[in-house]
Image 1: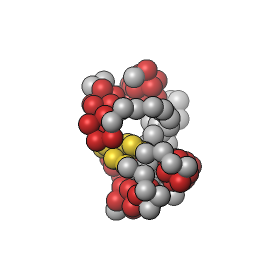
Image 2: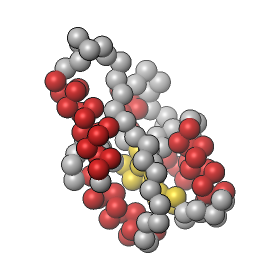
Image 3: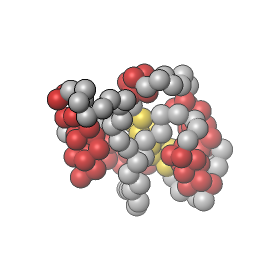
Image 4: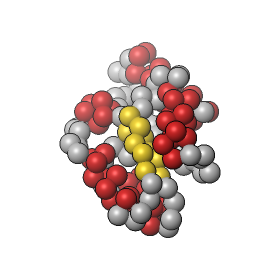
Length: 122
């Protein structure tokens, strides 16, 4: 799951899973937050990790650009190395930019497809 900030639905789900006894691996992609109006939240990955470990969950964070077709396999490899076998997967990621149909570039459209559709097929 994508957790680049300490607040929001996905961060809340990660905390709830940890409180329920799950170990949690999560991804984040700092450049995506930097492009958004709210900007990057410095220290968010460490803060989320700390919140999860307070519930005694094993956790790992993977910085992951899902537009890169090799990234899903790398995520699996890193998570299995750090936490062992994966028993459940929650997909919560998308490419989102503030543009309209007529001013969206081909590059932006390609990135939307790569992140929001292709990466889900991992």
